[in-house]
Image (cartoon, rainbow, N blue to C red; front, side, top):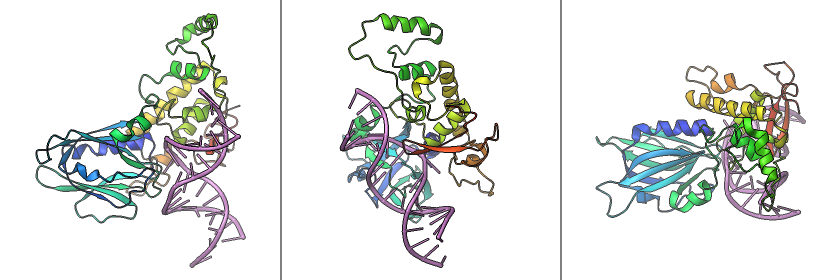
Length: 312
DNA sequence: ACGGCCTCCTGACGGC
DNA sequence: TGCCGTCAGGAGGCCG
């Protein structure tokens, strides 16, 4: 389930329980990617103050209520949904499902209780204290894909390894000359020659672009997923960045329903199948030119593309 | 320093 | 029907 739009949707879904107070914490299976800390019950008598998203991580901040013992300060959880995780709310006394590894019970001002179920069959996700893992998990992350920090200049110069990321496209040539004039700072870094798809899926480059959206963005931009990154033109970079932003934005607006088998309650086909042009469609025909879609592995990840629309 | 491969785990699906 | 192999939306870690 979770690519960035699903995580964003999950974050939004928690708004109704902001301010509610934790009354119980139950851990059923601590063995996720890293162990769920054994002192999560410290959250009891804390109120959920805010939920933020950084990359595909949910950051849940709790603050002590009057009932809480003492001088304790706020506590923040880092939560990641891995490949199969979800975080859902249920009425009190809802049965635990298989693969519900954590249930946090909260209550509102009226004493009405809600259960928050962390569910993750594959257990690639994580629930951790921010203070213990923030450095390791968050410090190295690249810009948010929907932020102004992620633009064509940034990506182009990151790939070309030209140091000045503020260079505008108009001044590209003169700027490059300027760099050549410089006495090549120690180790002159070479441009990135890896496949463009692996570059845009890298968390240090830009966060939140998973296999589905990388595949779709490259198709829409007409770029072969295996194209060496340094061979992408500036104009192609502009297009790629624009498509990454647009497709993520659209998916968020549609509620991030990217489940392969997602169907709305009425049984109609969901967003996933209607919207994806190539992902999961190897062997079908390109929506643009009807050529049969091909599938290659890039860094072990399946990559569907149209050989005609995305030439190498 | 980089790049590519491996890994954690369960479930769904296709072929035989 | 059932067994087995393969693959799946992530991403840190390790090795060459």
